[in-house]
Image (cartoon, rainbow, N blue to C red; front, side):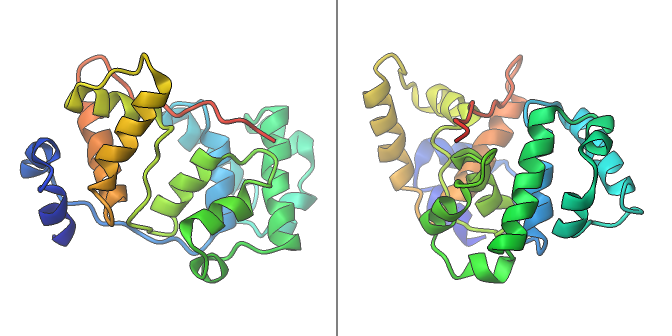
Length: 212
C-alpha cells in the first residue's frame, strides 16, 4: 500500500512495517452513535465496553437508536445497563448536539481535521482525544496524530529512545518525528498501537481528557 512506502522512509518505523499487516481505514455513517459508544467505552476494558454497548443497542430492539430516541430514554434505564451518571449525561449531550446542530458524516466531511475537533469538543463529555479517534476510525482521515495518547507516547519512547522528563522538549520531539509521516500519520499511529500491544506487560492507554 502507498502509505507503507512513505512511512518506511523512517527506518525505525519501517522495521515495524516490514512484518506488519497493512491497515485499511473504514468510514462509518452514524457518527452520533460512534461518539456515544466511544464515551461508553472510556476507562473500560474492551470486553466490558462491548457488553455495555450490546445492552445499549438491546434497549432499542437491536437497532442503532436515533438521537431523539436516546434523549427520550429515561436516565435510570441507561444507568441500569452499566453507565455512570456522568456517562449518561455525556451520551445525552451528544444526542442533543446531533439534534440541535448535526454531526452526520457528510457535514463533517466538509471540515478539516481541526475544524471537526473545534466543532465537537464544545460537547460536554467530548475531549480532543475522543474526536481524534473519531477522525481516524469513523471518518477515515489518514493524517491524524494523537499526540496526547499515552500508548503512542510510550511506543515512540521505546522506538526512538525519547525522554519525557522535559515535557516541552518531549512534545517537540513527538511533533518533529511525526511530521515526517504526513500525510499518513493515522496509519503510523495504528501500527505504533499494534506494536505497543505486542510488547510485554504494556498496554495502550488513553489520556485523561479535560471535560469542559
